[in-house]
Length: 182
Image (spheres, rainbow, N blue to C red):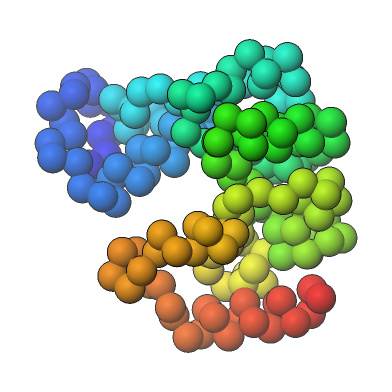
């Protein structure tokens, strides 16, 4: 349930959070931009935002208690800021050392928009999970999550559902884009 900006925000306004609401709350929390998340309070706890390209902050924050790190290899919303190669390679090393899942958000930069099929390829740092969307459909709405083989085993038939998942027209558009981007 989304509250309006004029209504008081109370914890009671989120009764029995539905999966779609929970996903939305998580997504806006991870983004770290109050202008997008303020209407969804209370937000999930234990999400830490770090300064981009700050290796010292990254090293101090990642531990065995860290579940996952989500990062854009090139920030889109914040002004097209590429990651420092040392930042991403250190991030990969820290995630491997602490058994932390590394997720690259390539919703804006993926599908050939940076000169490579995906921006991570410029850095030779491979994420465990990659999200892709906007460029993937060439203007047609579609989203995808690409995972390493060990993560693919988590998804069995019936464990993941989407409102418009598997849309044949969207898949055809993405197939055309991927053929062009290669």
